[in-house]
Image (cartoon, rainbow, N blue to C red; front, top):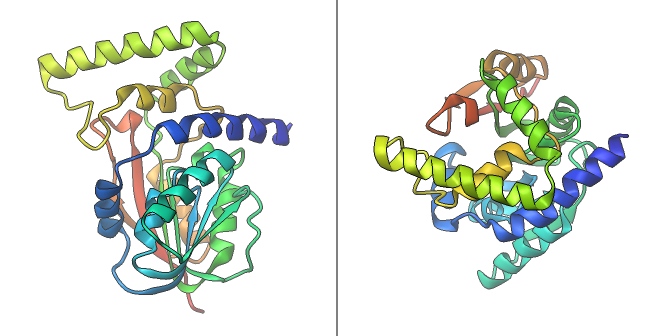
Length: 254
């Protein structure tokens, strides 16, 4: 059952990420805002997608492991790294539920918006902590649980059952609606760093796996696993119900 769910997630991202490559310049700026600025020996990008975060991490780490479930995403990431002539990134395919890396082997572990899309996000969290060395930094972005979460989940479960043609029409119609609201009310739903609202709709409602955390629950996870806790941003978007929150912490050296 777990393997079947993981296969569905892999198939989704094999299709999704290669056609939705984030803007590297803006991603780079964002990474440097949330990762403590120093030189790292070895960084791990857990769920790297198309690798734009990995490219940024390669500037501040001697070596980077770009890790993802999707082979298509990794190919896109490797192609981007080759264009920039970056030689210090290793691309590895696998699941965050069982990371093929030694304990305490990275001084920076970064995972943007990924563990909440795994079959077992807490297990994925534990794996990220396991490979982080004492004194190392763990940076995560995860979906925020709000009073509207149940509405999003009902909508997502309905959307997952849509035939392909209906799915396409739904995405286009909702995108038109959101753009009309943004134009009239200036809600800034379609942000400059992601003008392709269709891709956001697909990520909101058509992902096979989606889990949510409260900030308190994440703080307990960090503290219970020997990490400090710092809330960097409580919502990354206009609305909390469709946002990640960003946290980081340092692993105890005791």
